[in-house]
Length: 285
Image 1 (cartoon, rainbow, N blue to C red):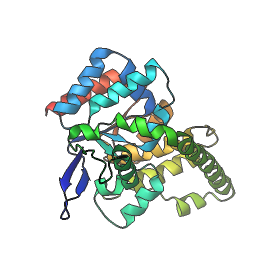
Image 2 (image 1 turned 45 degrees about the vertical axis):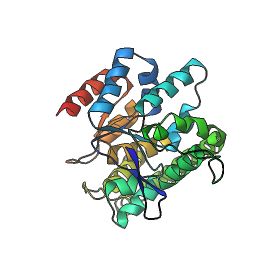
Image 3 (image 1 turned 135 degrees about the horizontal axis):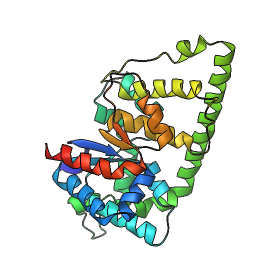
Image 4 (image 1 turned 30 degrees about the vertical axis):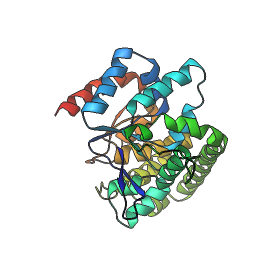
């Protein structure tokens, strides 16, 4: 959840915390919750507001959600508006997060996107410079998630270019690792040894083991456009959420990670009803 306090100099200090159950939703699920069964949507939102639930949300989510137009976009905007301030700005790049884990820090510190929060505040206070006569209302309404869609549109193309670069980089690297593995099978264990779960480094555990899976899976499944960002979603979702949605391919890969572990419970889009029921159950305990 996003909150604010007054700093020593009187200026606002923003805090992003995960207070309870953390949820990571891929964009198909966000759109389905926004546009689908109204009763399911309301049950989900009720759990968010009464059960200590926070939605992990990245700039990539926002950029991809600006694709729908007309009534679809308005439905998504309304849904995110109802989420209010019950969200957490999560970092997109797993490499950044795994590097933070090397240097310690709490899970919320390691996965938080500080740049996202700075950009959000700058956009929300645009035109509120000293002498403007405008007052910044730092109530919960200031941090409503729907506001992200209002300012991310001008950045949408550049963000999508970055997402496309992630695809190219992932496909190229996995192809290279696969070719090396075929020349020398021992290279896999040297470069990406299977890791046991470490609660202080959940992103590292997920990142390394998913890369192993992709290398070993390269012949059976050819990576395609969109898999770069899906890989990022999977790493961050598994490492820092309690509940997450991913597509079937990524759900299967995640469920094949070494056990025991404490990564997120994964659902795919057709399991949204079960997911909401489970969230309601957990929120009541």
